[in-house]
Image (cartoon, rainbow over the protein chains, first blue to last red):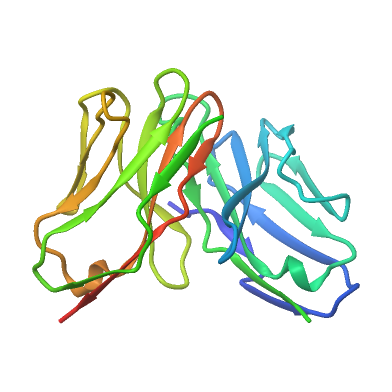
Length: 115
Length: 110
């Protein structure tokens, strides 16, 4: 079975540019999560969706960040405009909402560098 | 709110040594508890979990027991290998989402 797919794996951009990160969850999973990982702050939950609907976006750092899930197999996290402090590894994870609902499956991450 | 505290690393061991990584938690209700592992350049992978008090999760020689009385979920392995070098995250799931600890890096030398 294919796991969570993220693209790109690496992104280098300049301050002020728009960045879009993409995620394809595991087929049949109804919940999707976006995390950010930095050395200073560890792993932070940014937003999560249930059945394509955003449930909690309290972790989104500011209005420059937005996330969408137009269908069950695709989600995006957009940063506009990007700033150097956004440099981090961004993970997407998915889970079921029944059965093994406790377990989240993580993608390989996107390493973002904002110059 | 929910929180997870785990020992700071790095933990440096020789191959075949015994491993303990401490994890304690604060939560309302009866959360599920997890250990995730992150190998260099990869995402987090579930290592083991326990869903109720006194449950023992185990996988790949690693074990952890859900201790409600001490609110702990310490990770142990009897004999570590170089390939176990990674960052280990303790986590809990309360009502809705996972809460992670800050991670503990394990370095195993031959």
